[in-house]
Structure formats: structure tokens, C-alpha cells
Amino acid sequence: MNTNMKRILRGALAVALGASLVGCGSSSSSSSSSSGEKTYVIATDKTYAPFEMTNKKGKLIGIDMDLIRAIAKDQKFKVKINSLGFDAACTALESGEADGVIAGMTITDERKQKYDFSKQYYKTGVSMAVAKNSKIKSYSDLKGKTVVAKTSTAGLSFAQSIHKKYGFKIRVVEESSLMFQTVKSGEAVACFEDTPVLKYMIGQGQLDFKMPTKSENPSYYGFAVSKGKNKTLLSKFNKGLANLKKSGEYKKILAKYE
Ligand code: ASN
Image (cartoon, rainbow, N blue to C red; front, side, top):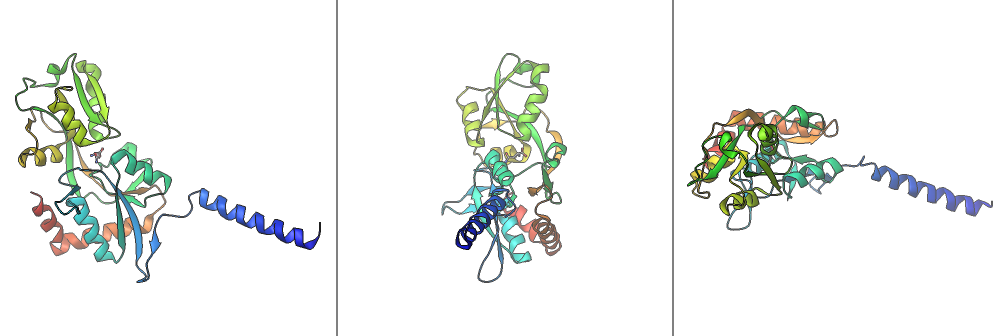
């Protein structure tokens, strides 16, 4: 082999090695701007009021959106928010397309196997909701009926944990809006969703539903990064959250959506 060929081969090997490193997901989706501030890609749910929703001007607002932006400002980083849907947001995190997920996401032991969570930032639980004129008063009334829940969620896990005992079927959909629609149309008699979301939607008159049973599985929301992969972002989130709590800004954000 002449020296020229060797050089070409060496070059090709370097390109292949570089490509395989990128393929391993060792590079994160974050980038640095000219101001020197890092931009993190944050994935979130589609409409999930009061945590993420779009206002009349098309801007993403809500507790999660205000929090992550205020934390970014406090900790001097930038965010690019991708509104993907809950299951898709988790997939983006796992594939390295997103650096973090903030999506009204419950901290659970099962999820802790895959993700690192920030300090808790909001209290939650799961409730059953039915149409306002429904006769369903308890889980026993669900016998032989169909309920609906959203893919990969705490609401779905809870429904799955009791469906055999109470003898109901579960339909699974991708988005909360579709879940509510499925109950409105009567294709399902009930849905299982996070209590603060149902309370907000019903309170705002956006859902003509009621919650006949108590809130289950008391738990908390957290911001998630891939396990062991983004300690820096996680600690910035925690520091920022602590600062917002100290300054009173955290309370102000929550009060906006009461
Ligand atoms: N609250 C859901 C969960 O933690 C997430 C969501 O629907 N945005 O499973």
C-alpha cells in the first residue's frame, strides 16, 4: 500500500469513528449561543393545563413553561421548548434529542430507574372524572364499561392497577384533549387524569365533568433528565427553583394559574 492510500484509509477511519461516537448519543442536544449561554432542549406535553398550554398569541404558557423560563433566566441558560406530547417527550429524552422534560411529570420509583429527577415542585395525584350528568359514583359502577387514559401516564398506571378488580376496559389515547373528548362523546364513561389538571379544567369551565371519587396516589411533579447524563442541568434547575422560592417568584407563578 502506498503512503497516499494509507492516508486516505486513515482519514476514512477517523470519519467512521467520529460518526459512531455521535451515534452512541454521547453528544447532548444542548448548544452554546454567541452570548456564551448554553441552550438546552426541553421537551414537554401538548396542552396540559395549567402546566402547558398555548395562549391566544400562540405562546406556550403555564406553570411548567413559566418555571423553566424563570429558572433559565436565574441560572443564565437558554431553553428551546419542544411541545411533543408526554410519551414523545420521554422518548426524545431517552434518544438524546431533548436534554430535559418538564411536563407535569410525576416522580415515581419506576421512572427513577430511567431518569434523574429534580426536587419536587408541585403536589399531584390521580383522579377519576366523569361527565357532569353521569350516574357513576364509584369504581364499582365501572363494571363492564370502558374508561380512557393517556399513554405512559400515572393516570393510566392507576387505571391498570384497579381494572381487574372492578372489571372495566381501558382505552389508551395519545393526548389529554382526546381523552376528554372520548368521555364527552360517551365512547368512554370515565377518564383517569392528574387531579390538578382536572381541577383546573373543571374550575375554568373548560370541562363539564365531575370527580366523584377521592384523589389517589399522592405524589409530586419533578423535572427529568436522562439517568446519569445531565447532572449540570439538573443542579441548575434545583438551584434556580430554590432561588425562585426564596424570591417569591415561584408563588407568583402558581398564583397566575389558580
Ligand atoms: N401527569 C402525567 C404523568 O406524570 C404526565 C402528563 O400527562 N403530562 O404520568
